[in-house]
Length: 301
Image 1 (cartoon, rainbow, N blue to C red):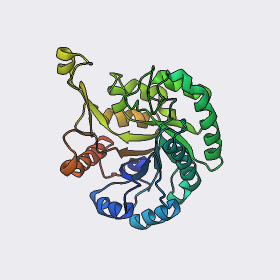
Image 2: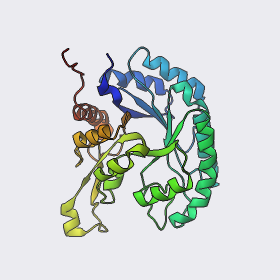
Image 3: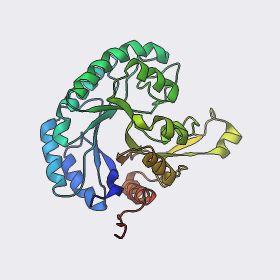
Image 4: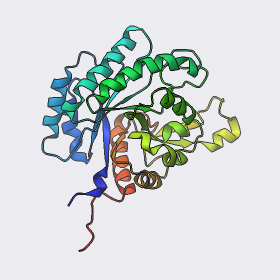
């Protein structure tokens, strides 16, 4: 009998530019992760991607662990050296995703830097229409993380897919079935948007989920507002933030989502550095509990 709990797997992100990502994977898989998302920042850095895929598959071995999504984060819409490397990185990962067993490539849309969001749309359409076709020919989906990267509607450096108004615009420009979102509650809560209603409306466009949460510091808002010297919100690992992930995962299941929730570490202000993996394993176990537990119990015949 198949295990319906694993319709939603809980995993983690790994840095593809590590000297030996496979060695890192061997270290962490015994902790109970069910999926991994290898990702790159701006450039694949000369990494031999087919070799990396083979090394990661060897590291996973016969464990029931999947690589559902690969990450390529940067600005593929601009024309600087690193921007061009980001665009080439997307193409490389699209062409080699099958070697990992991955179905989705995720990252930022990119943005025309320093300009209002709408001014990025012509370049967005040019780049992503081509990438969507390249990916569709290989059965691959493209997913945009809903992260503003400190940008807003008027200006920014990295991404335009950071709120529902922007999603309406970009999906109108690229109505391709294989373009969607890499979603997480955190990046909506950072801007005081309730993430739960989004699931019911937008879940068909959720191709991948990041396991990251936030704590809204209402005491700071009441005393100092959102533009004072004290941060009014903190990015947190799941289990340490404000989101009820039992409800999040229930809404995802009701909407028909199947895929992975990969924990995005390195952001929690408390569980980082020496406590990084302590926090991630707490999040791993918390998210497994939120989806119904770690073990499937078959209904008696």
